[in-house]
Length: 48
Length: 347
Image (cartoon, rainbow over all chains, first blue to last red):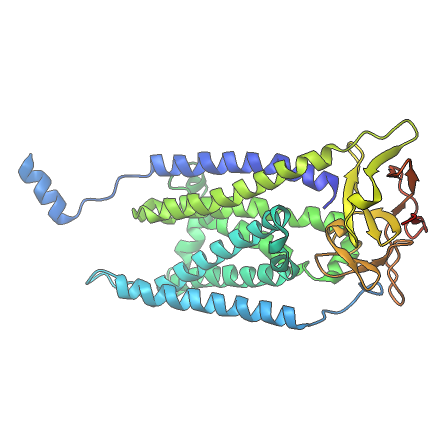
């Protein structure tokens, strides 16, 4: 690898790692809650 | 080495590598489909058309993660170098697996007579105006296009035509493709499969790849910082004995390309650390049969003048070396490729 390629690598990877960490975390936080199964809905209704 | 352009040559190592690859992929896909059906809850048996999408998609993700990990691993520890020799075959196979994953997705819609839905999902502008819920297919298609460009230009013919620096820069597009794949999974499968294994495997695998690259980059930073040459441009290498026999010591001027200073018995020679083939690190190789041998693909150069032995015609830039008060010094200015510049030092 050339000096310029190594320099690019050192710049790209921390940025890519930060972008992926933010992207995956946001995708995890913002995902809709799982739909309740019929049994779960019934239990929740009784408890209420 | 090549006389300009050389057709693919097969050797035992390549055949073993490819057989191992094919076996690994077959075992993974077969194992995934068998286990997924065996572990499925009663009444929730996934269909083969769903399973093949998952199996080939996850296989492509793991293959690309491994391909990306090989480079930094080889820079951190030379024991991983054998994995690097045939990495292009690994990449082309990963593209084929990813392409099959894409084909199975299209086929899934075709089997249900829903190809217009597939097309509509991709072409509806409102599907792109959100983060969670964005249509993920274009992310996969964009990554697949990048893999196609890389697979199509992976042959040495294209390396010759495009030149190693441009070829390397072009193939660095894989980093963008990897980001697209990770988000393809995070905004796709992870949004409707609530198994904790999905974020753990996705984050763990991509995080490991990123950390390996960052660590390898930091490790090489000191060498790249270089050694300041004196007023006349000479860089101190060290006493001849500080260079292991038939090996090299790698030095660089600040901001300059690396120089590999080799010792073969009493002969000292310095060449560019960039192999003429793929810009591999020749200085991490050794002298075999009297020739500097690149550790990546075995291209060879004579220590005296940086030229490949006949009939091959590749040449490396050489550097002047001198012995001053028992210390080897190399001049930071490269000489034209193939210029004799080695030195014999007294035993």
